[in-house]
Length: 400
Picture 1 (cartoon, rainbow, N blue to C red):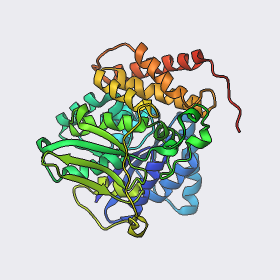
Picture 2 (cartoon, rainbow, N blue to C red):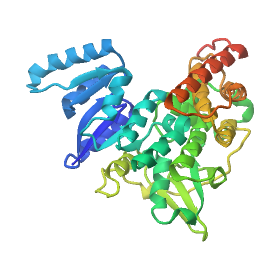
Picture 3 (spheres, helix red, strand yellow):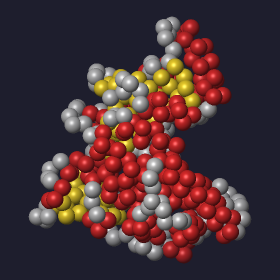
Picture 4 (tube, rainbow, N blue to C red):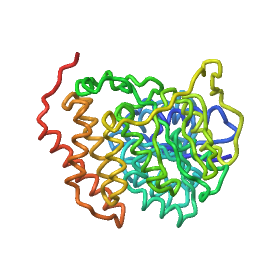
């Protein structure tokens, strides 16, 4: 039985991970959970899965969670309540729990970086969903993984697809990786109308149901920019070996082209439980958890080039990776600030790319020596991004 620790258990990926665990009770047990502020959801998870350790955002919430669990323990006759921790130390304690065989890194944002890095250095196998880990600190994290002789197993559907396809060939046999992008809700929107796109329109993704930030990143295609950076580190491919194509059906999750012209593609339902189960059970495959591709509905597969005018964020991400150093970290931080301002109606949709571009121009080109350098660069990029949002002078927009 594989013992699991989850960073970000109350988020979308964390909840679906626990759904997979529940569908395969003979395969997994949960030994530690970390979440932020959703105490009600976390308490339900704790009572269901009985972890030994649980962590929350801060001391106040830790006390509140402990009180909830004590109150529930009497009616449910729970023999032993978990240890409750909090903050960055609590996250790291979950990530390095002595009994955990695998750590699912699904915490949103840079908050999960230090804990995931600690898990890797402790030799834990990591199922990786947190983009910031490799976008902000890919070189350091992968160096630690090589030193600890552990593999990072991608949970995101695109990298998970590539991981599966790469099992059919050697590294030197690969010509290129092809990441697919749905194109989001604005794939066919006239360019003249993008500047006035509303948060409601940007959040209306045609295929996937995700958190707000990643949905906006899908609308700008910044999510593919992040995935290009991740693919570079995960699979050891050069920037010119990683391509993005528009595929509106989201049925082909990604492809690998080999030097002999063969192309392997991974297809599947638009259900994150499929890549999650693959990562949790790797290197074995177990019976499906009920996620099946509807072949009757699969009538066509379309592919198209990415428009740099429509999706400038993808180009910004590629340039940040090309220059390296602190720029990928700054890219992520600036995007988070800009997306937040857009959702709060303080920035138009087109302003997201403008803020990111200005931050990359202003960011010092410094290499990283330790995780503290990454966190300092993240903080500086956020400061610059807030300045750019204010400088652009967009007034708060009213809801339609």
